[in-house]
Image (cartoon, rainbow, N blue to C red):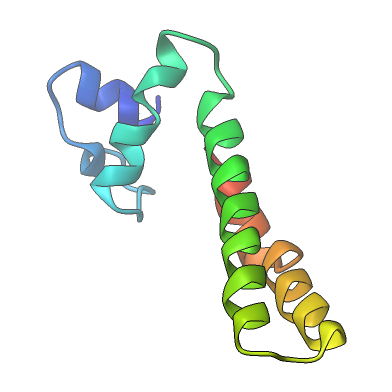
Length: 89
C-alpha cells in the first residue's frame, strides 16, 4: 500500500514505516490513483527537464563557455539521485 493510498483513506503517509519523504510527495502522487499509475513519474520527469532548461538559461546569461553549460545541464539531467527521485513516483 502506498502513502498516497493512506492519505486517500484519511490516514497519514507516515503510517508506512518505510516512507521517508515529504508528505507533499505523497499528495502529489494522489492523481496516480485516478488518471493513470505513472502520472507522477511523467510530471517529475517534465519538471526535471524544465529545471535543466532553467539551468541552461541562468548559466548562459552569465556568459560561461558552452562546454561548461553542457556540463552543468548534463550533471543535473544525468545525476543518479535526480533520476531516482523522478522515477519513484
